Length: 206
Image (cartoon, rainbow, N blue to C red; front, side, top):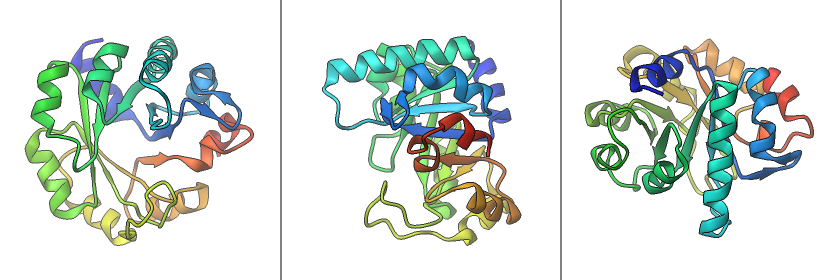
């Protein structure tokens, strides 16, 4: 896929799932078609517990499934894994290297995202050339232990000033997504509310 096509999909994306290789309902790669049909636009594999070879195999399977389903597939932290798996791009934390380094490894057509808490970090992500950013965590979440929540103020500020596509993240469920939307958020990253659901596609639709 061309970089322009990937960025058009990113611009249109509203629901972004971050999940391990195996969720409560089964293997993530096997669930991608149903999740895509239910409204998930971006799937990110984040699984720090798998051995390297296993993680690569799961990433390849997710990349293939996402390509067939017409959604974006992003790898967590590792541009090297993204390249090996044929992913659409990589998502970098604040300490996972810079955007130019990732793009140098993946090429200009790849999507590179950045975790931020909004504000100056969001501005810096745009200046670095990130294609998108997350903003949060809006609420405290066990997926980011010890990370103080930013609150809805970070989303409201991003809605006024962001120069790149941005997704709220952190403790989100259907009710909290509505609250974030009320202050201007138009895109959301969801983790546990979908990954831990007995019916992930149903949770995505909700």
